[in-house]
Amino acid sequence: MRSAKSKLGVTMQEVEAIKEGILRALENGPLDAAGLKEPLGSLYKNFGEAGKKIGQTTNLSLGLLALQSEAKIRRIPSDGRLDGQSYKYTLFQNAPAVDDSYPQADAFRDLARMFWRWCGFASMSHFQWFSGLGVKAAQSAVTSLSLVALGESSLLGTPETVGNFNDFKSPTEPCYRLVSGLDSLFLLRRDLSLHIGEAQAGMDVLSQGKLANLGSLNDLSTHAIVDRGLIVGLWEYDFDAKEVVSVSFARESAELLEEISRVETLIREELGDARSFSLDSHKSRQPSIALLHELKASLAER
Image 1 (spheres, one colour):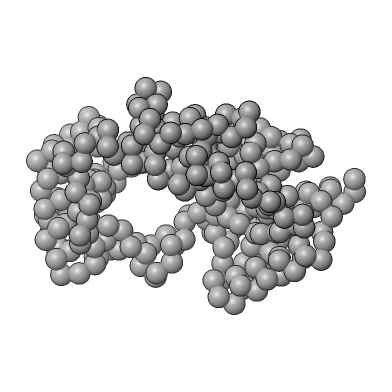
Image 2 (cartoon, rainbow, N blue to C red; image 1 turned 90 degrees about the vertical axis):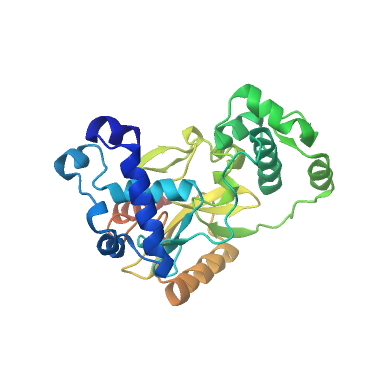
């Protein structure tokens, strides 16, 4: 919005006008961006080359983003798939209030409560990253949670969670699962060090299409194979070959191969594909798949 104002001369009056036009158009049902152009008529404006330079080609996106942040409209996948790239917009019925009736301090407190409910254990730095809050605001938000430390670590949890963890007996046998690189196991804390064993810390893995040390990363750019919370391998789905391409940091046991086969069948017969994110495609995934093959061959030679 700031760039549109300073670089393109957009006024708040223009933004409010396009917002009102969008809301009127959506009264007749969901529409995608192309479908909104006609009912908006003269309200729709293309910024041309000037807009392309700042990544803002039309004023429609300004209105859509503003209305979503105000919880007046919401985005829905055109084909029903959450990993798709095509969306429609619809009026947000029974939306949460976005006004001063929800005090900011209460919102931060509730966010902290839900965050620790979602991820179980996290440090204060994890919460600060997730919430975008400063040190003082983050500390204030967690005061009512009575968080306690997990052993000698920096990880915190509610007394109930710590008690449940202390009573939990970890399985002695492997329990392999093929999960997304955006699985909440990694995403809520963005700290892969919690999920890497000593043997894997120095392993070279894929990061943004290149090999990088696993212990140096915060995020995965491929999907992961996990065993009882630890990353023990990587995988991608090869759409053309209709198969899972994987590399394991340890011996590929019968249990792991069975899990890989199960997921491969699920994707091929029910999902059709397994994207890393909505803009992922069969073509963009090929370099990662090729590097997985190279990494697997390299590990086999050791």
